[in-house]
Image 1 (cartoon, rainbow, N blue to C red):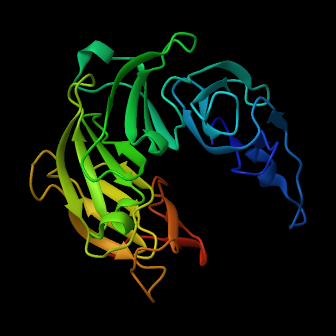
Image 2: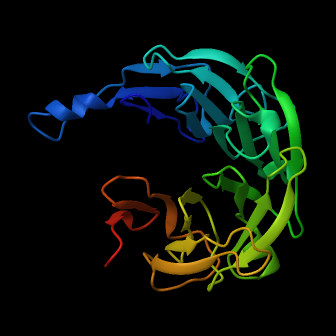
Image 3: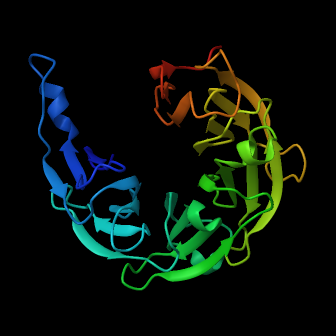
Length: 288
């Protein structure tokens, strides 16, 4: 969502494009349910796995698209939401399954104020870091991998842009350990280093994770939503400690693709949205 509009892509569905929908229409629904039509469609892509929006610059980054650039990020100006405009793309890094883009304010002063893209490129077993400030002249900064790599899937910066928390979607099935989360030190964006790893209490697969303050919210498939304290993230041991969970798939915690798909923990109300593949949409809030 950006500027009161929802931007929607879909995976493996042909010529879906990027739909744009004005959410303010929902304020005046007189007789629900009501069917709506889109307000705009960006047709420069067919299907895409994901979309990332850097709100501070009003740019959408379409990733994992079925397009001529091989699934690398496609940059679209959405400052005027109903007139999305192509700005460029990047092909050299290969397919990005997921990504985050930030206006950088971390410890590496070489990149202060730059638009920094970090992509989890599962198909090449790498995470890539790019300077995407100039959409027509993307500058590769670095890339990195790690031991027992199977599919680097998704990750998130800490709020201070010092650390990056990464999940590998297939390593639990491949290697047989419990839910594994990796913490990288990105004090120097040109030289990322693996700082520590965290193993959860179950063998469930990790999917998407998001940082809010000193907490990491992990969508952990059959193990549900896990909330992990990262106050001690700079340490090389015991950097992460689970403090709460909500299990939407109580019958099993095995390493299979059921249960929680994603989480949204950023509402001012304290409500947390949990998207569960079989169970639907859960709205929860921390207990007292």
